[in-house]
Length: 251
Image 1 (cartoon, rainbow, N blue to C red):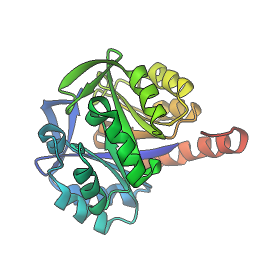
Image 2 (image 1 turned 90 degrees about the horizontal axis):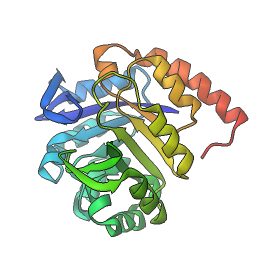
Image 3 (image 1 turned 90 degrees about the vertical axis):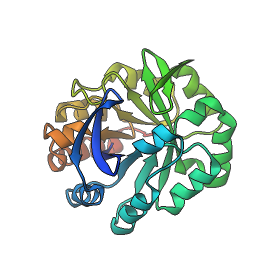
């Protein structure tokens, strides 16, 4: 299981939101570039960067900053936030993203996901399944749809999506621990690879998720508040991942 530090950018600063609420943003750094290089120096193999301005505005707003970050990193990034057209998807890759994360358009227009897969390949596309009370939220988590998360997952599998980012919005930024039941259910009922997000608090949470043999976990507030040490977590989780790889078939 890959541990992926999150860098959420809002007004050119690194922030963490509480349950996705823009009005409850805590600033952890005014230098996203330095933050990116810091996590890489501690052993991160990939970064999870979200353009929160883009999520709110409906199109990426910080691509110049993303390009500066990717030009200095030696590890890949996955980028989300306002990617709702082929043009913005192309621009994200041109800015150096290795994978892009799409949420809103997966609900509004599943054919758009098919187009992205045809153009960029399914290894390059992550569909965000942002859950609140079992339903999917869109447009920067500001709107709750009537679509159950399970329906979106099945629909996206049918169009060829390989990887899903599953977030429990009610846990995100709370340090209350991940929704293990949700992640386990999704991982069992889905052929795709699962990235888990929301609520990570301590290394034991990551050990639990790693035992589910999922693809990765996104680390946000726990890293910035110090309840998880990235170097320690990588060492422990890598041991579990090695054991699982040796004894079980992975997705």
